[in-house]
Image (cartoon, rainbow, N blue to C red):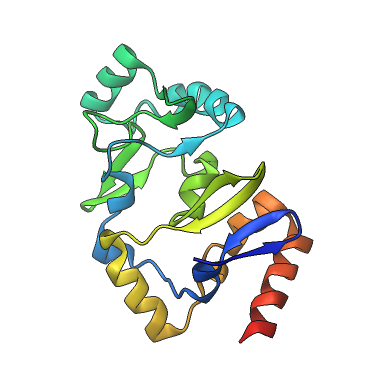
Length: 179
């Protein structure tokens, strides 16, 4: 997979061409439930989440509350921080509304959740954006293609939050000039 550099951020080329629009009614919030690890977080997000537990306690299930009380809401795996999952499945912050998994700390959820299916990795000491194509997102790719919604636009607000408006404009200019 080829890589491009936008400012001081490396971007997987396939991400730039991807189409994506999450139909939550189809996947039912699978990204909050599937997988063995929770969302990647940084130390600032960990501090926020630990303090947020009290504010969302009334929305969480008894099972998730017991799990948080016993194990905490975050964990370290191979030196990186993640939200904790209940028995290797759902994030401890999941709440269900009409059978759809949602985040109980929506206004302060980890940036990695808002960027999903883009993941931020490190390469040569720089942020490296990769596109994780999970089977649970099949409908999102299909809908994105049908509606011609670029992945970078779908997660645009989160990219701006992470890298700033100027960087995001540079990214869009690069993509527009490449097509």
